[in-house]
Image 1: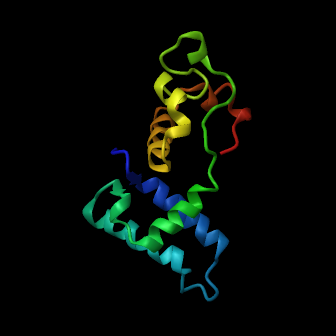
Image 2: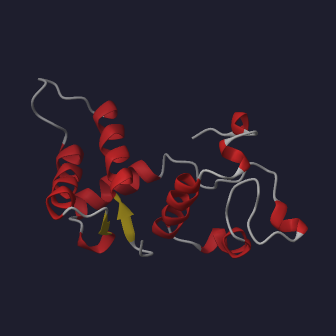
Length: 136
């Protein structure tokens, strides 16, 4: 995944968030944000791709995605940081030492790349024994 790519699961999550926020008044039509994101989703499906470059999205789709993104947790941290103890990868959140150190400087797309990776790996303590600390 490139650093400015948006994964299909994020497009899906944004569509569902917008559908809940702005439900169809008639069961047929969709909010403009849903329509914009659905177009990007359809293009991904047609090309059998799993990600889209953010700069190829139409402005309305990117704005809708950024609005959804602003509602997501910023950091995967669960306040158990083993990188402070010398681990290359944090046992608590699954981020590398560099990712933990540079997190504030990462843009939303870079952060979502990391989030996607740690969700796929599912090995960090945030996903098992300390899952009660997580609000996703």
